[in-house]
Length: 71
Image (cartoon, rainbow, N blue to C red):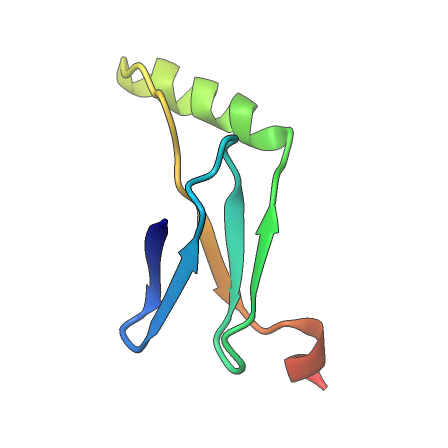
């Protein structure tokens, strides 16, 4: 199990992932949605090349408001 912290009072638990994925976290209701994107690999390569850094993993969490909380 892996514990993720999105806000001081909001902890999210999930099984340790077998593949890399990222999260969208709603600031109102606390809903967590997982996502993958083909663009992240290109971003990782660009940033690694720019800084001379070999990136082996990433953790990206976007915060905002889910479709239900926007209404």
